[in-house]
Length: 242
Image (tube, rainbow, N blue to C red; front, side):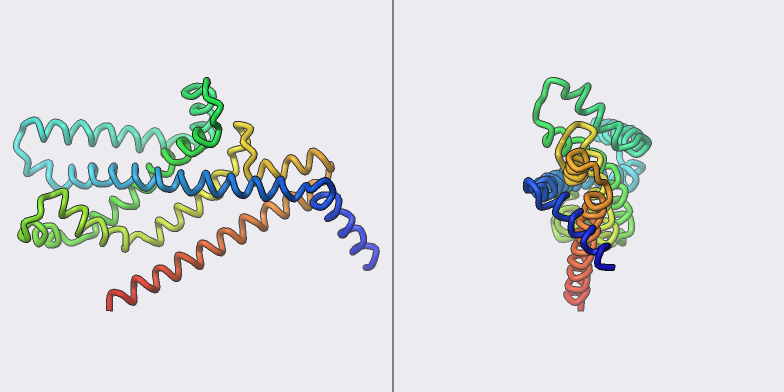
């Protein structure tokens, strides 16, 4: 048993202590969180816009008179459906590679490319989550908003969307956790995220066990922390309803 502990200690020192190799994980963690945070903001922005377009089309297109507004809404809905089909139908790693090697081939800002790729990908899933939340709100809420003198956009912004977000918060939290884990493929564009940091240590020490276990544990701790945080937020929102 003593020999096993000594070997474990030697492996720990080799992989993390010597030459400050733990910094690869720390720096990678910072990049992973940065990408996840800004990609989440972008994904929510895109998702809410797409959800509003899709739900507005479903709820109002039949009642609208044929004209410019009807044509614009129909066009926006068609573009949204194409976006959702393409993004949800292709792997995120392929989208990341296309973004880096084709669309932004001349750019050296890998973090920007990663944020854009993951944000656009996340937006497609957020859109359907928020759209389901909007469609679950009673139509009387829209009528109540309009009766108060609010226009359609104001009613959506101040009445419908806040209720919809509260209803779909658990699903949005799951999307955030999925996004956090999906960023682990950032190494495909030579971006030194958390997973890539582990691979760098493996390349230096030729020892895979500890670096990969460390990366897995860090992701697990992050997921558990954010799950706890979202649970606390849900409880607070429920308490505000009473």
